Every structure is written in C-alpha cells, then in structure tokens.
Length: 71
Image (cartoon, rainbow, N blue to C red; front, top):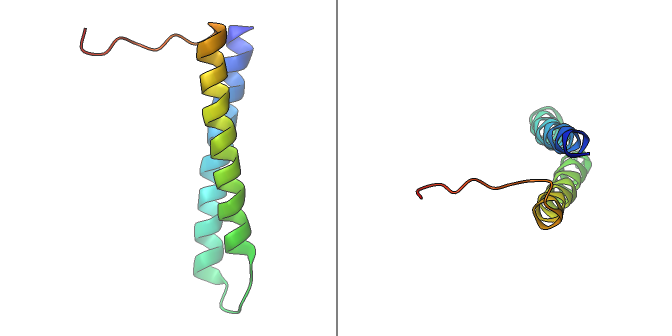
C-alpha cells in the first residue's frame, strides 16, 4: 500500500508541475483576453492543496515517515 501511495504522490506532483508549465505557456502565447492561464493556475492550486492533504494523510496513517533532520 505504501508504494502505491508514494507513486500516486509522485504522479500528482508531476501533474502539478505540468500544470504550472502549461500556465506559463498560455501566459506567453495568448495575446487576447483568454482565461486559460487563470484556469491552469487555479487547477494547480487545487492540485497542490490535494497533494498537501495527501501528504498529511499519509503521515497520519503511518504510510509516510518524515525524516528527523538535524537530530
């Protein structure tokens, strides 16, 4: 279960990065009053919140183990 969960987190992170790149592309190419950039950034924010929630859930369920950095 942990491996599948971690793989889903990685895939979701890649989708967030793709959405950010998509927003950058739309921002550079669209010259008119188009909402594609806004929608891409809105989608990225929603996916980022989902990613943070999944990480918190994984830590709470014991599937993810944060490192003790500095100890």
